[in-house]
Image (cartoon, rainbow, N blue to C red; front, side):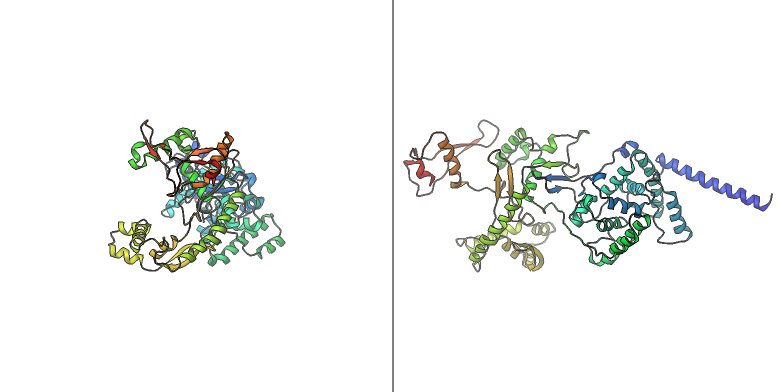
Amino acid sequence: MSISGKLTIAFWAIFLVVVGAIIAMFIGINNGSFGHLPPVEELQSPKNKFATEIFSCDGVVLGRYFQSSENRVFTAYEDISPNLVNALIATEDIRFKEHSGIDFKSLFRAIFKSVILQQKNSGGGSTISQQLAKLLYTDVARDKIERAMQKTTEWVIAAKLEKLYTKEEIMTMYLNKFDFLNNAVGIRSAAQVYFSSTPDKLKLEEAALLVGMLKNPALYNPRRESRYDMCMGRRNVVFGQMAKAGFITEAEKDSLSKLPITLHFNKVDHKEGLAPYFREYLRKVMTAEEPIKSKYPKWARQKYYEDSLAWATDPLYGWCNKNKKPDGTPYNLYTDGLKIHTTVDSRMQKYAEESIKEFLGGHIQQLFFKEKKGRSTAPYSTKTTKAQRDSMLQKAMRLTDRYQRMKAAGASAAEIKTAFNTKVPMSVFDWEHGTKDTVLTPLDSIIYNKHFLRSGMMSIDPKNGHVKAYVGGPDFRFFQYDMCTVGRRQVGSTIKPFLYAYAMENGMNPCDEVANTQPSVKVQTGLGENDYTIWQPKNVPYGESGKKEVGQMIT
């Protein structure tokens, strides 16, 4: 046999061995021999975590409940800008609409450039379907060999995804899954966080910037000033790919490439946005568990009674635990993508928050600062002794996280005292700027914060009892004690117009005389028949006994 014949046989033998090995590998992957391969059922309904949105009665999103790394809200394909779709296809997968999960042309090009030519920048061979498979089912590889095995598994998963979903569904799943950093998970959150926009309204330059981040969101993070030139270069690569694919002209590419990167960054946090006190109240109510008496200390029996009554009579109280998903598990407020529609009016809420800032922060608080300035008992009453002031400040100090951490770490009383009297950089609340960077001792920061007056405001529609505005304090980021539903203050004489108006509706007139006596009220403290105490309202010391006219009692 000639040499050429032997070489031909050798070539075909090697070729068949390689093909056979590839076929065997894919069969092994499909059977799960090389690691977990999600079953069809799991591929048909991949597990995604979506944030819960809270809406005002006028359709404005007040805020979201989400896990720290899962601020994701589902976006349908119809709500995604064509600019984004075109930029994604041109940059990541030009033959997306033609292949069935694996683009062999791009794959062989990438292998040839990286293996044969040893080029580091060989271009990716992964399709959008493969990238989705990676996002859904692949963990971080420990080495190159494990990553190579993951790649082959992703090919199989991508091919299966292509059989189960349309191209539009695959693209939608991918854009909803990707983490753009800065609490921007999914395209809707990314549009909101970086541009204060929505996916359907993204401009071409905005869409190109987000698509550019898909390669490496940390490297091409536009929030980092040091990466500005790198981000701009990556965005312009997207423009170049779009021009090459025919989505834009060369003239448009050149014009767009000259535009600066303009962000309208919108920080997303549970403590930010409208009605944070209301949203926190709503969260506690909806996630409440069924009250168990043994878990309540004796001094909290009244609380147990109130919670038990709410559980039995209020459908919203404990809603997430009372209602079950189709699989029988309770709803998760942070991951199940619920849509909560409330009675709060975003316009009234905004006015209420502005009113608190204007009158409490701009007027009353300034008078309080002026009155307390230079007083040794500040921020407490002038009747407070130095010993009482020091005792109250020490109690406040023991409640801080700093004190608790140092105590748990075994720090001595002297070490803790030194730490609380050593100046450190910190951010504190300021009515004018919201936050202020300064240098204070932790003890001085406690004194500073205790100077701030608190206020609560709730507006209710008298026709139906709907809460229209809810402000629980000056700023939820710094003062999370809710003066609306947690703070307890005597109603005092503000109850009189309601009480006497009701009395007059029922036949009483201002000239009628009523005995000015002290009534006794039975207050239920538990579920039992004998679980109650007697409460008697106290009058001012100079209150008169005998009878008084209703008109006099109002004033």
